[in-house]
Image (cartoon, rainbow, N blue to C red; front, side):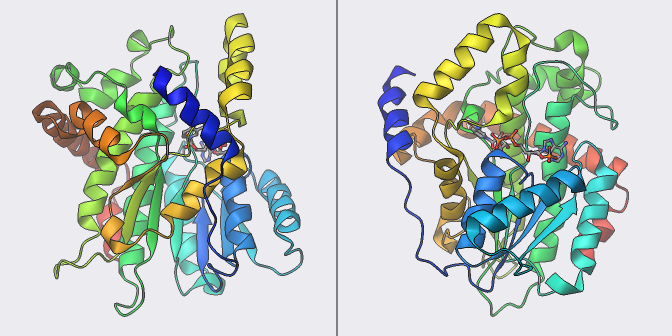
Length: 351
Ligand SMILES: NC(=O)c1ccc[n+]([C@@H]2O[C@H](COP(=O)([O-])OP(=O)(O)OC[C@H]3O[C@@H](n4cnc5c(N)ncnc54)[C@H](OP(=O)(O)O)[C@@H]3O)[C@@H](O)[C@H]2O)c1
């Protein structure tokens, strides 16, 4: 959309303001996938603003290296305010064991004030997760939803008199892009939509980011359901849930896309170089979302579109009759997959 170019340039040079120093003093913030890019930049912001930060990585070695960088950048070396935990979202067992360890940790036992589910991937090559799903769908949709459900149930149990904690899902404006008119039909074909997007013969290899927009749209559907579950029987919001798009940010997320073809080797760095903002600037929207008010529960935090534009553009994929049908189908599939593969899900959500 050409009219967005000037706004991308604006966002590249005019940062979202940060709250005053000490705004997160005494708070504990979880950031998944914080060894690089936006997650690491967000961890630096939260730590600089006073928070204790739990960051996750698939490898403890790179998590510890990121921890040292973040402590240095935030000026908190040696203060013991950052903790690294292992999390591989290709496997449900890793998500569940991460969640159990998080809950059991005495050091952080007062619970979380904010969780930012940031970890996400783009993979131009078809790859299957150990759970049997295409990896983009596995990480961006299924495992993010699993973590969201587990964290929500835990965060809801906090004392009723404290300010509601925040659960932030990093999605993308790309959720507006898929054409969902055939999704209900695909859902009806053996195995459902998740199977459809996970079959190699349906892999859209001509696209630079196959399944990415679809994975984020399905996550947006799940976030809608999680928002409903975050409201208590008295109608009060127990956990403030938001989705956020950091905008176009120069990170390594496109590294595999760049390797994919010669054209991409030229185009991606050029595009990101001209219009991509820094991870520092993009991660500021996570901080904004982590301070959203109860009235802003459910809001999609982003800067590229005006609220009016976003509400108009979201109609086909989020508000139309087709979207309502598809949303229900997707949620049903996600929930039945999670219940089947994580039989302890309902118990974990109650405990
Ligand atoms: N960059 C953009 O322009 C942009 C725009 C809109 C939305 N986003 C979203 O922002 C989020 C962060 O993107 P980024 O650009 O910062 O990407 P990035 O630089 O590639 O960082 C991704 C992070 O996710 C972690 N990760 C990757 N695979 C994982 C897995 N299987 N399990 C657990 N963690 C995993 C990585 O940590 P380890 O390798 O240490 O595990 C890494 O720290 C993503 O959700 C992305 O979709 C980005």
